[in-house]
Length: 162
Image (tube, rainbow, N blue to C red; front, side, top):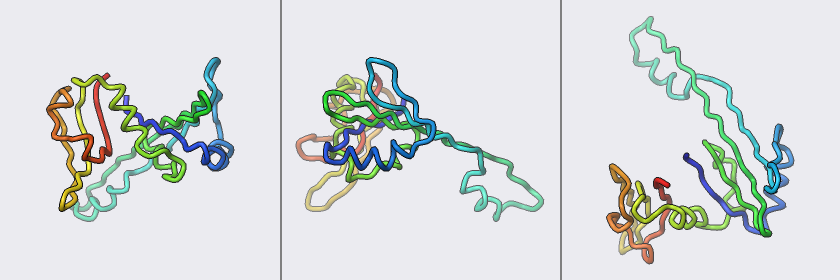
């Protein structure tokens, strides 16, 4: 299940609540013993943005009749004086970097995914020249099979099988 996990900075929880939770229409409270809300982000069906560009190179009278939707959701969980945000779909795009503890989700994924069940790691490597590295295994593999050195590289994304 694709999701992204964030931890809000304690000093930013009020701003997050004011900008995301309070104005949310249709926010659903979590059942006990959970403390928090789920904010559904429905999406209406519409043609993808790239359809118009494709139409310009088609032989008339060809028509392209496509529509798509991209629903998402934000799950806010309050626990032990922390506020966690789990996003589904494109909901992560609604979050502001200033609200978030840096690298929390990556560390959580590395701790939650068994060492031999990693599928992809994206990292920034900083040497004399900076570059991005993205390695994807054809099947779940050991963390040791990826060319990442966690004490050197800045890990941007981790994907695995739980």
